[in-house]
Image 1 (cartoon, rainbow, N blue to C red):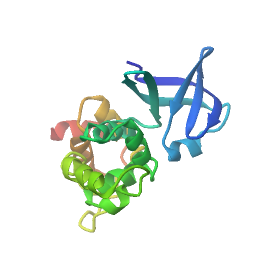
Image 2: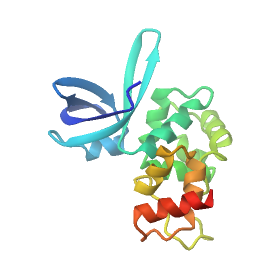
Image 3: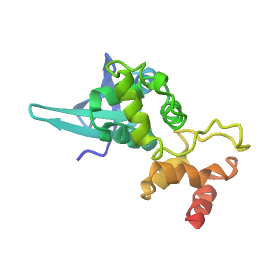
Image 4: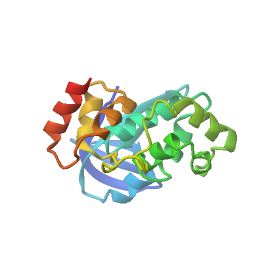
Length: 189
């Protein structure tokens, strides 16, 4: 399994990039928000999901571990494959997609290419309890979590499910150093 790639963006085309890693080019399909941020000759790290089918293999890449884990949750839903998963992840940032699922916004999810109303509703039902609380809630006074939050990535790397990691960080002061936020979140467990 290829967990991540660190290399240089050698080429870009139709939501795919070729990452040159020590002279070997890996073609990686990325969601639109990540594709738009990547520039030729940028040094990047992409967290990857290696999908294999009967007659093909494909790498899907994400700028954060949180986004990769959300993608893995999406494709765990019956009837949602990597193509639909990347289409959903291309709607907006990973945090906005997670938030839409947490808020039961099936209209947002169904905007993805190849995802109909029934599939969107199935995604909401299957994942609502797995993605954590909505981050843009009127009842919370703390700042919303970001999918690019290094503390969130650290907790996920330590084995926290996305829902638990976001819940553990939700009540903590976002201005604290990453190490302190992770330490406090671990103490809550």
